[in-house]
Image 1: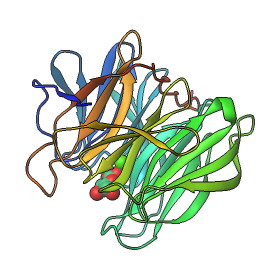
Image 2 (image 1 turned 30 degrees about the horizontal axis):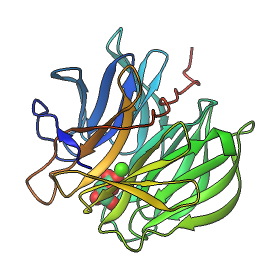
Image 3 (image 1 turned 135 degrees about the horizontal axis):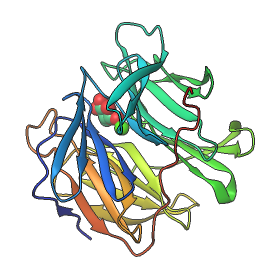
Image 4 (image 1 turned 120 degrees about the horizontal axis):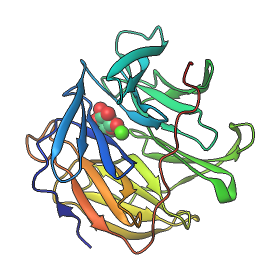
Length: 276
Ligand code: BGC
Ligand code: CA
């Protein structure tokens, strides 16, 4: 099974964080410092030094910078800062996603990708630490049917599985990790379908691996470039998997891909704690 290159997509250094919102695909170029949208053609909506992630909210997008969380109103094209962290010099925000209650789980990483100096935080009306000793925080997603949170720390090649309290938006306990030892590359971003299967992008691994709830790899979607970073379901039937890639370190790749899946995906949840 092979994903198709979206020819009109422009080359990204580190394409990431795809979000499907009202018929439009939004995504970032982390190192290029851009938020783009795609619906037949690409538009650049916003630029900053680095933009590690975006999540939807009821008025546009919430995005990360190296050390802050900001809100971009797409109607007013205005930006306000919601949170700022005092991070060590070599640490920056990386991936971020919201749970069903609208809390933002955003994590940080060691920019040298070696030390476990990153953390996972939860942001609502305020911010708190959820996990520490993380090297590259990535790929958070929830399965509401079985009250589970999945989480990736890329360099240790871990897809961690937690029992999750969906009412309180808190982790109860860690259950296990999925074994990814037989795959090339490191797990990066991921999304989930309506049956609870995970679609995990492998950076350095040329594709997306589909895991069922038991952690068995049931399918590989080949992507025609090495550094595959993340994916999200979109289109009217929610069966098109949009895939981001990176050209960082290899000078090739960095385009969008798409793959028609047999099962629809779950929509991206919104941040629900915007200040009035
Ligand atoms: C990070 C990259 C990193 C990659 C692979 C991405 O989420 O933003 O800096 O190289 O994961 O671990
Ligand atoms: Ca990522």
